[in-house]
Structure formats: C-alpha cells, structure tokens
Image (cartoon, rainbow, N blue to C red):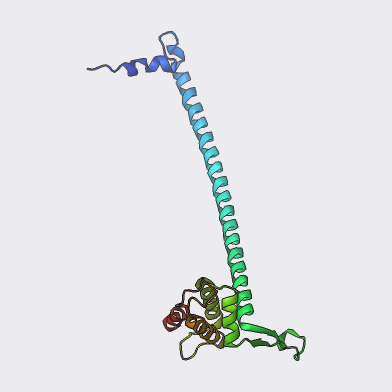
Length: 188
C-alpha cells in the first residue's frame, strides 16, 4: 500500500491529533455544519448579487433601447426636415390656419435639382429621403405608379446626374444617383 504524504497530514491540518481525539467527532460536526452554513450564506449572497446584476443589466438594456429609439426618432425627424426643405415650397397663404386645411406646394424639378446641388446633397442623404418617402407611402412603389414626391425626387436626381462633373459644384454627387434609386423602386 502506498502512503500519500498529504493524506497523512490531513488530520493535523484539520486539528485532529491524538490529544484531542475525544473532541474530534464534535469538532467535525461543528466544522461540517458551519461550513455548510457558510457555503449556504455564500450561495445566497451570490444569488442576490446575480439577481441585482441581472436587474441592472435589464435596466441598462432598457436604457439602450430608449436611446436607440430616440436616435431613430431624431434621424427620422432630420430626414423629414430634409424632405420638406427639398420638395416643398411652403404653406399656401390663401388657406385657413387650421392644421387640416394647410396645403404645401411642391417645388419644380429644376428647383429640387438646384437645391440638391446647392445643399451639397450626397447619395446617402438622397437615399435616406427616398427610403423615408417609400416608408410613409404605405403602398408598394413601382416605376409606373410611384408617389408624386418620389417621382419629383427621381426626376430632380436625373437632372443633377445629367450635369457634367466639372460643371457640378456638388462634388459629393456621384452621377449615378437616379439610376440607383430607380433600381430600388423596381425592387420594391
């Protein structure tokens, strides 16, 4: 039989020697019960800490969701303002002041094209406007039956695309905007 040295030291480490062998069974019971109590207390502490961490994580997730929704709302508002700037001339001064009777006049293709150039609109900005118009239309868009706003935006983009690169002061314009947008309309 092979004797393992660390097993021989176990009674000494635990406090069991020949002098206190009479106390060994009561000490063992005390150590076992206090060890169980300590480990149970530790387990409860860990459970409560885990619960608190889960609660904190869910609060942080809710905060992230609120911030994401706020960021999306601000982005939509920005795009809506951009659409209003590009496509709408303003309020009809002859109409009543009530909200239902206000009518907005659309810009012409030339005016929208000039705004695309002067405001230095990039493809991404025009694409965001396009996506927002399609989203708000609540109906499938096609080349033959697209909304008037979409048609105006596409026609103005076509006019800007036709301008020679040297003559267009808007260097953000890549010259293929209208083609890419028409392709998106056909994919809708």
